[in-house]
Image (tube, rainbow, N blue to C red; front, side, top):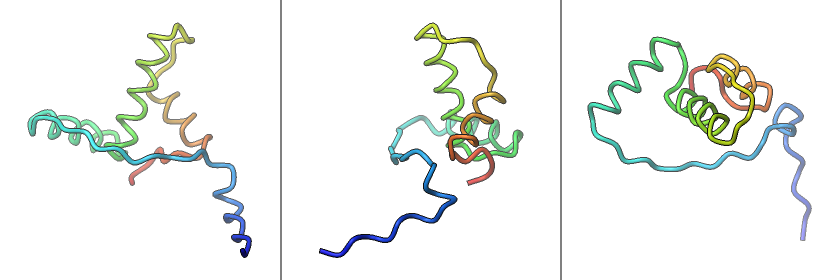
Length: 83
């Protein structure tokens, strides 16, 4: 069996991501999309940031902001911008 080529250096330090599906009412989707558009980020990035904030609160982690979540996501290799 051949060994696979290692990932490009810029991808090597990124955490693995999973794709998931989420069902929601159309009006909720539209509101989330509008909120993401206003911030200039993808809806997925907005939802990841909000999920991280809520989990931090539930788990008693230190309080943070959505900007902090977005910055940490970028540092971890997530997409803080559009996409």
